[in-house]
Length: 416
Image (cartoon, rainbow, N blue to C red; front, side, top):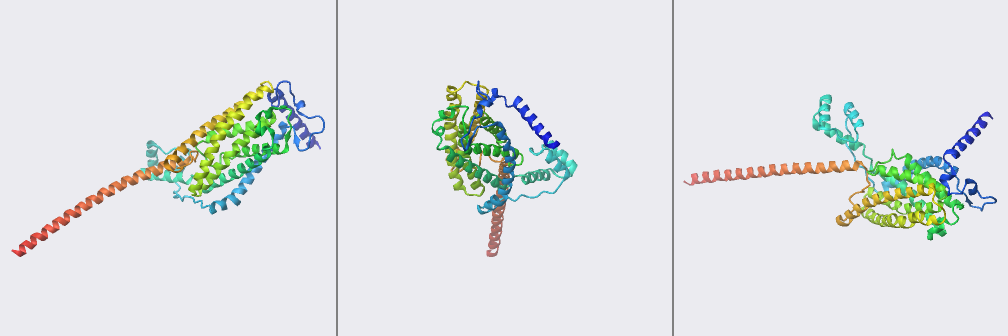
């Protein structure tokens, strides 16, 4: 009984502390509105609710549930599917364990040893420079993520984005604000939230929490920092828009983002499986939808209605500036990724294929440099081999001429 009473007291104090420092109505609601005004007096229609900040606490255990579900999905569904699609992993040479080289590698994983470092390692390990460079090259190859791992991650994101986009489109296509964005602000902030839109919000927020928690173990890509900024901005955007009851416009933001993401993940899946033509078709579809939704629809319709149309219904407050600042951060990321996509489109149009994902793994740069180095060294070896073959051929010609001259002299002497 004492423990139960102490638990209730702790929860009450925490709620009071949050209400005092975090859930201040001046931050989240327009001037003249309070949390009491957000609560409907009387009977609430079935299948609807008013959004309250405490509803978001459920997203944290939901994120852990997503991580567990992903673990099962990748091993039970994604892994067999990768084998069916023909995903193959490169087999790298396993290096011998050398303690001093291993310690240096773990400390400086991102960089190859410099000339001075190699000289020091030569003395410590009694190895030649070539042996040390070869060891580090093979050791870095061992840590590269396999195609199977990348396929499993992409397939998990594809499944979620596809389900989220389909469910979001079904629940929003009949709403008035889907066609007329000014309807997002009619009666704001006293707007009821349908249960379908509530779960849409909760699932999206829980999923992005799971992505942020798993970012350290997922395949690291070249836009790693931009991905971190995107996940944080998205979590803040979803959480704040729910608390401030920006749910109507928030559902539109999520729908716009989900519309192209599942195409990108499906293109990656087929790319890892070697289905080049299918990958190219999906990439073209993704590029068109991404550029239209992120560079045209998002700024001209959604950002415009939050910046301009909303001021016809309420006076600006902290939440107005904060929400629009997050939308502008997302728009800046859209421009950055659009630039990468346009680079890929240029390669696709002028080279006839997508050479590689501009947002591919960070390790792929190292792999490409090594392959270029191997090609250069092969060209050098081929040139040397050709010169040796040429000299050998010249020697053979000289030997044949000398041999024929001796035969002619011998025949002339016999004739005489």
